[in-house]
Each structure stands twice: as C-alpha cells, then as structure tokens.
Length: 345
Image (cartoon, rainbow, N blue to C red):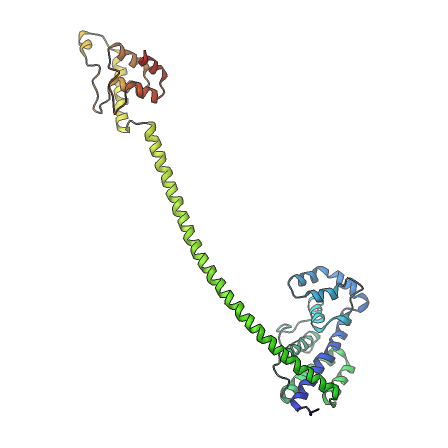
C-alpha cells in the first residue's frame, strides 16, 4: 500500500484523537458528574427537563431511547459525545464558556465547560472538513487544543495516550481507516450535492409560497375593504328604509300637520262658544285649508270623534278627498274605529 502523505497522516491522527480518545475523556468527566450507580434515578429526577429538550428537538428519538430504554437501565457507555455534553450543559452547574458552547473557547478558558466546548467544536470541524488532508500548522494548533482539553478532563493516563498517538507509526489498520474515511467523504460530498439540489427546490417552493401569501394578503385586504363598504351601504339603506317606513305611516307632511293641529285647536275653542245662527247655518262647512284638507278630513286624522259628529250633523261632505284619501280612508289608516263607525252609518 502506498505511503501516506504527511498531510494525510495529520488528518488520520486528529480523527483518531477526536473519535477514539476524546469520547473516553468526556465520559470520564461525565461519570464524575453522574455516577453510574445513580444515573437512572438522576435521569428520572430530571425527566421533565429532558422531555422539554426532547420536545424542542435538542434531543432526538435515538438519544431519548438511550436515556429511558424500554428494557434495562441507562448506561453512559452507550452515550455518544454529543449526548453527554448536552446532559452536562443542561443538568449540571458546570460553568459555560464566555461565548457559549457552540464557539471555540478562548485560550485562557481551561475549566471543564470550555474544554467540553473545544472537543465539541473540533469534532464538528472534522465532520465538515472537505478533504482528507490537513496542513501541519493547522494540525499542531488543533492537536494542542484538543490534547490539553482531553488531559484536563481525563487525567494523566489520557495525557500520555495523546502524546503516544501523535508520534506513533500508523500501521496497516490505520491506513485502512484512511481509505474508509476517503470513501465516507465521497459519500458525504454526494449527499451534500443531493441536499443542495433539494434545498434549492425547497427555497423555490418557499418563494412561491411567499408570493402566494402576499397575493392572498392583498386579496384579503381588498375583500375587507369591500366588506366595510357593503356594511356602510347596508347601514345607509337601513336609515333610508326607516325614513320611508315613517313616511308611509304618516302621509301628511310635517308642515301640513302643524297647520292641521293649529286649526283643530282653534275649532275646539270656537266650538265651546258656538251659537247656531242663520249665519252659522250658511257657513261653508266643507271649506278646505291651504293644503287642500277639509275640516272633516282633519278631524278624522286627529281622532276627534265629537268634531266629526258635529260636522256630519251639519252636512259635511264625507267624499271630499285629500291626496287621493277620503276621511274614511284616513280614519281607517289611523285606526280610529269610533270615527269609522260614525262615517259608515
């Protein structure tokens, strides 16, 4: 098999450090925070907190099954680095890095929280690394940061293991690992291309949805305005309908009504002092006022039965019409039944 290039060896050594050594360092610290004997009871104690993380999709279904297995009890040996760091972040009092767990901590931050964040950050960098090589400069920087974090979390034995891994000769098995990594990278590239195509389609669909949403908003606004206009028109029609209804209830204009009321009041006063004379007998009992309404018509409208009876006694003409209505018509309309009886006799 061909000899590996230095840049390829750098990549393999860093992968072995992150994939093989660092998980054991994280687990060593995890077991101190969550002693294996009490792990099941501790997880049950924080069930609500963990379930909230599950609902928020911070924990996935596979991780949830490891925390609360249907058979047996949870075991930290089955937990990966991501799950252990998640539990440490959310269930312990470990001080987080200044810039949070999702960024590379500052060099001066050397407590457990920042060390866990370092390992998490470099594992993520390796997972998204586009090639199977790494420059010696980048390798040395990354190795120092990761190895120091592993040593602080896992103790002296792991520090020694890191030193040996950095200089040991990579054997046949390590080179096979390199080939597997290359194959995995090709598969990852193909997967990314597929995801890019799907992502482009999703973005296009999203734009279409946004355009449709904008159109619907415009149409909704227009419909709302039309509805307001219809409500205003309906309100106006109701007012006009009320006016027409009132007019139909009372066909006599308000100004004529005032004249009629005034005439009736005068008649009432005059009737109290009326003395029948030959002049009175000669008076025109059917004389209409300025509006064209006869005395008997006015009396029928107002409901003055005694005046109607008086006018009938003096031969008032019951057939004189005002605007097409006879005295009998107006008495019926105004529901003056006693006057209707007088006129129908």
